[in-house]
Amino acid sequence: MGRKDTTEAACALLTGIPVSRETWERLETFVGLLRKWQPAQNLVSPATLEEVWTRHVADSLQLLPLIGPGSTILDMGSGAGFPGMVLAIAASAMPEQHRFDVHLCESNKRKAAFLRTVSRECHARARVHDDRVEAVFAVLAADRRMPDMITARALAPLERLFQLAEKAFPKAVCLFHKGRGVELELSDAKRYWEFDAEVIPSRVAEDSVVLRITQVSRRRDSSP
Image (cartoon, rainbow, N blue to C red; front, side):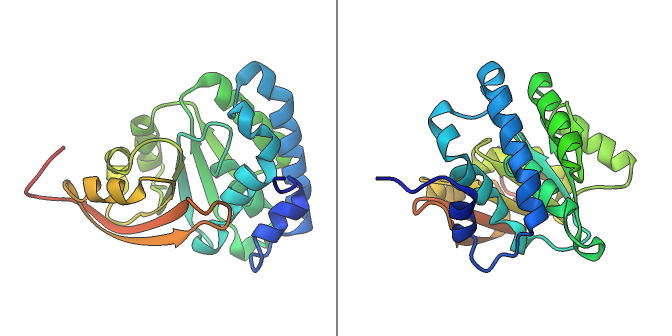
């Protein structure tokens, strides 16, 4: 028998990470919208929809201790909003001195429309960009709001993620969810990039990790 998928189960996975009651209430609204839009938009894999609280929401919230107050986050390939929208909802319920801002990059117009609906209904600290990552970086640069943190979940191999986020380096810290094969991805990325990587065991799945990556720069002796 699998674990029950409830807010309580998600909370149990996040022991030691403070998540306010207001955040859980807003996340309830988010999950309700996800279930409503899912039949038409296929926002998440149908096989994981019944585990949304533990597999998706808790998986996103486990990043909170790694985010500093005042940060500007760019969530690449936001999809259904994991982890970016979940983090933006959490930030919106924090005291002002602990808040951070989240930019969500999702080029699929329908998914971006869903994210805007969630942001509005949940009063999230989120700005949704329905464009490619390269274009979003140009917008943020023009606004002088280049991100100091980059997040991504189930988007692309590590080496490709570095290519997408290169304009934010070496300043930006990366928080990437990864599963099986993470060691191979790290090895492949080191052929083209120099970086420091901390491998943090996931609170949600035994075969998953969070990579906290800093000081990323392209190797001078090689190019992809």
